[in-house]
Amino acid sequence: MSNIFRFVATVSLAAAALAGAQAETIVMASTTSTEQSGLFAHLLPAFTKATGVEVKVVALGTGQAIDMGRRGDADVLFVHDQVAEEKIVAEGFAIKRFAVMYNDFVLVGPGADPAKLQGKDIAAALAKVAASNAAFISRGDKSGTHAAELRFWKLTPAPDAHGTGYKECGCGMGPALNMASATGAYVLTDRGTWLSFKNRGDLKVLVEGDSRLFNQYGVMVVNPARHPHTKAADAQKFVDWVTSAAGQGVIAAYKIDGQQLFFPNAGK
Image 1 (cartoon, one colour):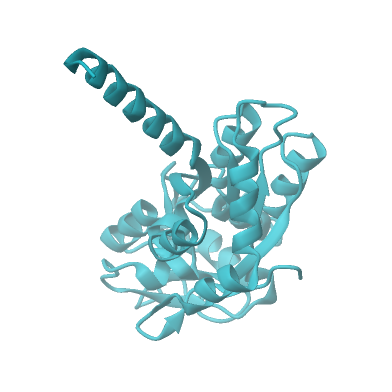
Image 2: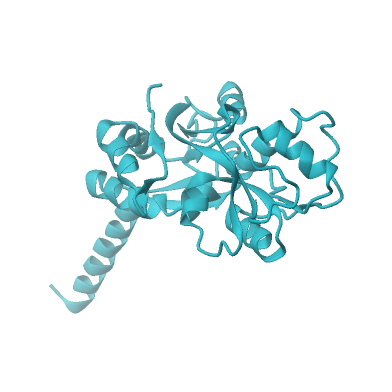
């Protein structure tokens, strides 16, 4: 075989290998909490080892992640706003929603607690934030956490009155926590990101344990009938694995300082 033929053969094999590698990589649109909590760094290598499929994560607010699925810019969605998840399935842009895991939201704030809101009732706490014009950082980014926060404000006596200290950052959970830490403000966060957050400063958990703070995560494959270019078969492999005993066990095993961040509940 001449050198030129060897070169062409080598290039052809390399191109085929590259195409194969690309065919085994899926795009997952997910929330900043799953990424910033460190869960994916723990979870995805186990999935790739089990299936050979690699996952590229685009971490956004849940609303933006779902919009990626609606546009066909992702193969699978891993998010936490059940109303929005059920809507995209009903619209036909995702095949089926599966429950995966849960944790909870907590309200954190300065240790001195100037609004005196410490307790278990999230609605009462937010009412005190508004009444005292306390500094409060809102994600303001249409994320699952932002959607939850807006639901909780609706439980207060004056749902549209947030106080003069209320500010929207239009940012992820980590940056919102950083802003709260730097300015001595209150902020709603998922517990997973809070447990992994290192720049706490004077912040501490002030409101927790209210059943309304339950935070459910779901996973779904983007519908190839709407977007034929998506990698539905490999995306389904992820859904099947993460809801299986193996995937659920990997989620349960993820801990920081001995504390479990997420609790598997597939099929519930």
